[in-house]
Image (cartoon, rainbow, N blue to C red; front, side, top):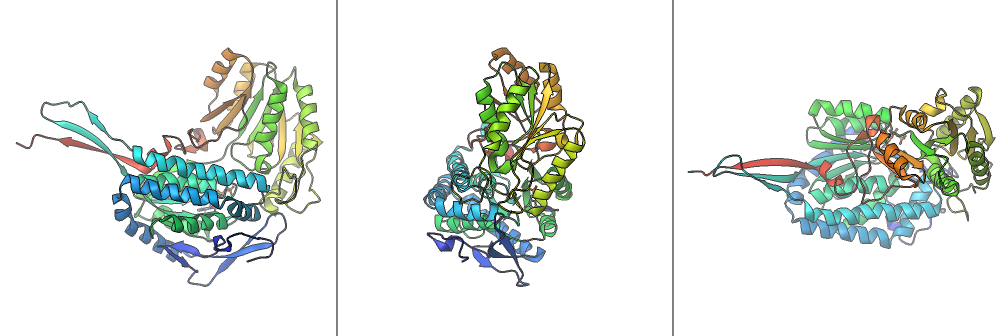
Amino acid sequence: MPLNLKLEDPTLLASDAFIGGGWHQAASGGRFPVSNPATGAIVAEVADLSGEEVRQAIAAAAQALPAWRGRLAKERSAILRTWHDLIVANADDLARILAAEQGKPFGEALKEIAYGATFIEWFAEEAKRIYGDVVPTHMPGRQILTVKEPVGVVAAITPWNFPNAMITRKVAPALAAGCTVVLKPSEETPLSALALAVLAVRAGVPAGVLNVVTGTHAAAIGAQLTGSPLVRKFTFTGSTRVGKLLLAQCASTVKKTSLELGGNAPLIVFDDANLDLAIEAALASKFRNAGQTCVCSNRILVQDTIYDEFADCLVRRVAQLQVGAAHDAGVEVGPLINRQAAQRVLRLIAGAIEEGASLAVGGTLHPAGANFITPAVLLDVDMGMEISREEIFGPVATLFRFRSEEEAIAMANATEYGLAAYFFTRNLARSMRVSAALEYGMVGINEGIISTEIAPFGGIKESGLGREGSKYGIEDYLEIKYILVGPGE
Ligand code: ADP
């Protein structure tokens, strides 16, 4: 174990792939380094699988399916509940692993572990509530039944920005429904996924029910997962670009598909808003995870009558944000995931300045290291600039000016994305009008952080398909079977 990662339980740091209940190296012997984005230090060397081993994992999941779907819901629920309890009991270690491979401040990592665990708790409960219907009949002497059945083997591909929670909110409903899973975590953050698998074994998840395939050959692994006829459901969280590719690949076997893709969230501040509340919410929504979430406010739209006051306050607060490595005391903003990400954000800032925006604070490389960007505020951004169309994925707040409610709504909706939107107002009628007019899957009114396991998370337009969490989240892992019972005589 590397010196910089001290764990109470070192066995949580697994680095082989997990297939059919066993830990596997790549047949080629290949491994790839996972590095700490803050320091560049290697955290672990992880098995770099080929397509052949992915096929083995799919076969293992298919083999485990009949027994797992045949278990009583109450038994699956109890195993999930035990898994949840083990995650909570090991939260510190899991957060250490997560922070080391992903870079977010340790406090945020701990919050992610707690948040990730809530999906397992929630779906352990939902496992027992998968009801069908008895439909009033259309002909005398017949009965119409609908039953819900697990869709089958599920393949999941997950990103690096929430290396724990993006997994639990797919795997927990899948397992609760009676499906088995092959999971491909991001090559940037496979260790959190493998640690979850270690605890799944301890919780009693049977061999083959959860498989974790690790590797850098993302396209080859993705081709196996999307192309296999044994996989009946494909679920992805990541960029819109890759999501579209994978959706097209799923067409050849007509898989049930869920996608959580990019966003371009507007955060609208009307002149009747509580400004202090709006500033704090904008900070939380924009700078959490160094701006690397798909629901981060990507465009802050401020009514012109309060624009200058809002901008002054925001700039003052952003200048105070503490930047540093995950374990440094008081850190609020960590590094970006890698050097390319940091360079991309610097390029977006430079482009915006060239197009007429002005940089009020930050926006340069931070002395903490090559992947750190000083939290920035760009003023006078407009909808013609490239930065207004791109998902920034960095600690850069962009302020836009608007005059009327109609203009704010038009600006907010002028994007191919439709994930999350936020607005701030004290006017009830406006709250109703604007929330109805926003073309988004999720709307926060006077709130900047809205994710919770009990509410449906998901987008419309090019932000995705399906919902995760809530009573709806399990539906994506179920099929409806209609049964007509005739008299038989
Ligand atoms: P981001 O890195 O912005 O989160 P990506 O869409 O690049 O978004 O990555 C999300 C996940 O998709 C990761 O697990 C990554 O390895 C995987 N991935 C990237 N490209 C492909 C591809 N061509 N086929 C299958 N999976 C891919």
